Picture 1 (cartoon, one colour):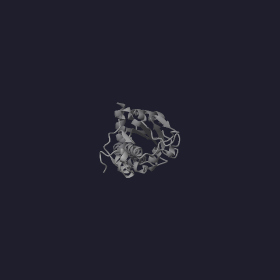
Picture 2: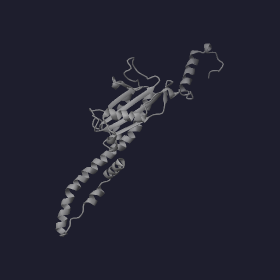
Picture 3: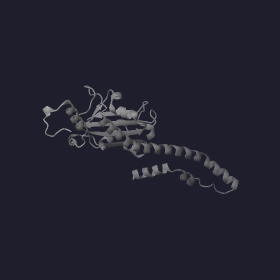
Picture 4: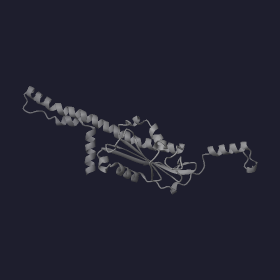
Length: 249
């Protein structure tokens, strides 16, 4: 330990190393004030995503498209405050192009070049998307990442991509994972709906014939009503219809 009254001019090389190590591991420094930051906000980010991808509010309401946005709490790297905002969208309006679409922003300015070198792409590439029911290259998916900071950690003078600072990378990863949980619920529901529709289509095709033949065999005067049976087969579609009615009201 170093004495509190020891003069800085008398510090040895070993003392300086000890002091630097202690300061690096000290966790009670006061965090910098994040009020100077100007993030977009989850609602405005969602509006921008819909406009960029051609997704309407109706598309989101009827389930043909999915949009989720969130804003992380302020964090710091090297004494600089920053806020991460993330948006995830999926739907037929998005062209897959064989990969996940990534839109990067730094202090509301789009970053258009060197995507593969950016920390956001590093995070997107390392996530196991199949755990969120996303099939890379097949599932239409767009990821939006906005880094808001008093000092963006660019890696080059050209300011074309953001360096992979551990604190920034950690926040982006957690933000995407959090938004992707709702995406998993959405995609799982779409899978159930598709399976249900396929099953109901088979019954709709053959049940009328079964009803017709059974009526002839039993010599009944009237064919049985198959509508209640078909209605009983629908679970997810019925919920979706109810949601649609509530939305229209």
